[in-house]
Length: 190
Ligand code: 5GP
Ligand code: MG
Ligand code: MG
Image 1 (spheres, protein in one colour):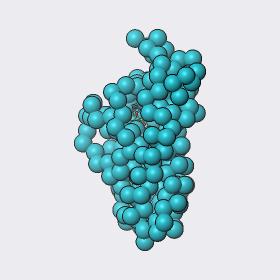
Image 2 (image 1 turned 30 degrees about the vertical axis):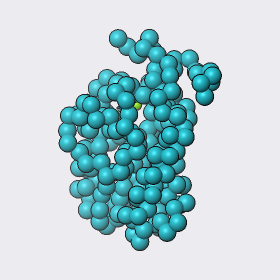
Image 3 (image 1 turned 60 degrees about the horizontal axis):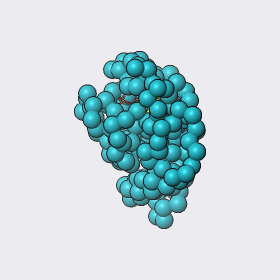
């Protein structure tokens, strides 16, 4: 790990793959307890949450006595603002495939920072009369919250840095890195 050659643009690894996997297993355990006898719909938020959704779904399937009726769906949103942080203006890019009315829904997000994205998703999906609606977020950045929004399952506290990897991008790059990393400052705009 210490002597691993990092790709160009990456300064340091902040959260390694094992740490991420451990957090996802813990979240899966918590969700499994709460939905043991319920049908569950995981709604992953593209593109950032693609890996956390896949890994959480598989971890859930491995919890003894966990939910046996689990469906996967995805939604895509984008927000204006700069490359580092979303603005209050969140836009729906692609809706879920199936209606969620009457379903037990857990939104799966990569990261919460100012909170606008999850707030938008909770409001929009909450309007559709799901049986219940909760949110699982791998990374919590609590430093710049602009809006109060409930996160029911949290993976890890993220340092106050712009992170990439494990689904998270900078200008669509770095998503496929298996860890969460800090970019070299010269890569980011001043
Ligand atoms: P919020 O709307 O809560 O500020 O943040 C949610 C969205 O902002 C994320 O889904 C992501 O698109 C972006 N974001 C916030 N912090 C980071 C970060 O550290 N790295 C990356 N790549 N995206 C972030
Ligand atoms: Mg996201
Ligand atoms: Mg992004």
